[in-house]
Image 1 (cartoon, rainbow, N blue to C red):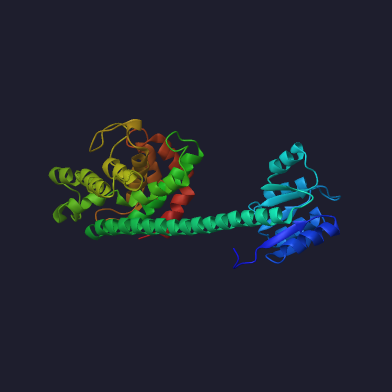
Image 2: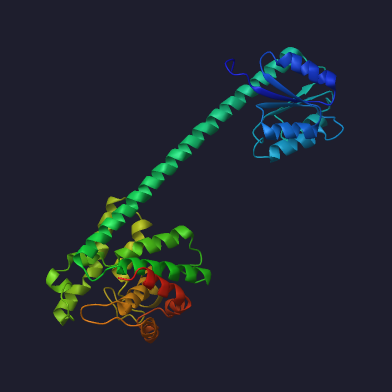
Length: 361
């Protein structure tokens, strides 16, 4: 405390009192003087002091009002205020503490008492400032660690998606387009109060979108002669192809176990990988779920996945137009797809068209 001269702001409308307090304190501290409440607030806001010594009775603005203003302002709310007043009634002291004061000294002033109390409150303020700085440093470190973990998570996701793309050269920008379709569908359904998404926050929507590219991760387990076959698959080959849903789920489930059961990041990815081929009427795979028993993440993915497959060129087919693809979605509403998700796709048609254009193969 002796190494640094702390800043004091003394406020009193009597010049004699200002001179007295300055003379008692300026050998140890830097003392600024204010002859009234308004001037005190101007000085405090320009350069917040370490402590304020404040008279109560002043003509322009009484000390209680000044104290309340100091405590209301984020720049000065942590500055301790000591009232110095000839008003010694208990009610006046109570008003001072209710206004936010740290202490109350009665006039006539005892110099040793004044110096001791100023020194004590400055020491407490220094400890508080040190604690605030430490907490700010810890928050910055925590933010950086969280950022590192998020970047690692995204890099892991990218690596897993890239592995699936490497095995299936037909996917192109399919995974990026479907990710963005899922995002706009989820945002639209949240905005319209869909029961499964009305309470979703931005982080939930982001996790849904970031999980979407892992929908076909299970294809890494499908043999090349089936996965890379240019034409339609026969019944046996199709049965093998369908196992990619459970393979993908198992890959992600094991990864989640190694990550401590992360139910946020990989939870949606597991739902999507396993259930994006379920059908609204219960005739899908692998579990034959129907209606709202299908996780909403997978219902979004089903529409996004089929729409993008329809408008994309494949070795065995030509791309459909946007209008044709939307009509196919309409044909499947209530059978293959959740009707509400299909309706959301119609509401988001301009966004779908722009995503397809921006991420064209």
